[in-house]
Image (cartoon, rainbow, N blue to C red):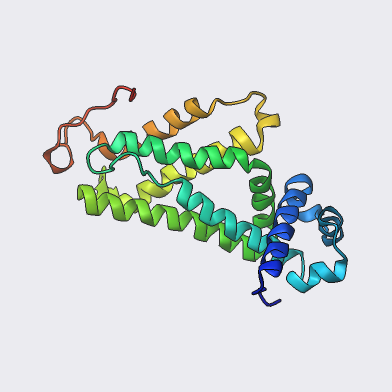
Length: 223
């Protein structure tokens, strides 16, 4: 593994190479991308590129690590309080996730491809989704005291909805050409946010609402 640069020039060069690598992976996919293509786009020698990244796998790993953190931050509700506005907070968080997924759809398509052929990226994919699920489950228990949903562990329920959102984003955005139609971001957001809300805040008719709070199957859309 190569050493991370410490000078301002080195850091700028590394960031430039990551941008160029992201461009090549988005264009060609993980399997077909080549370091020589990255060097060409970056207008740097192969030797110069290898001083920063030992191989394609290392370069892509950093591209995905950066994207992982961006997703984690993008799917954080900052304008709405999950305690008092759970539906609105879920809309905000899911909009952030889906908007970034749509923006980075080509890189995400390459990532899913890589996860099927390289164990390291399969593990990255697992870590990414697990981190998101654990954050939600922890907040659900801490803020609303919910640990079980319809008789099952809330973590299992969260995994199921997270899978739905992840696969929906992949179909709607990463595979838009196969889907055959562009999905409006707001429509996508409302669909998945409603699924989260209905799963955790709309109890069966014969069960009381969690914490004694009056909840209904649907809520009006925020203004």
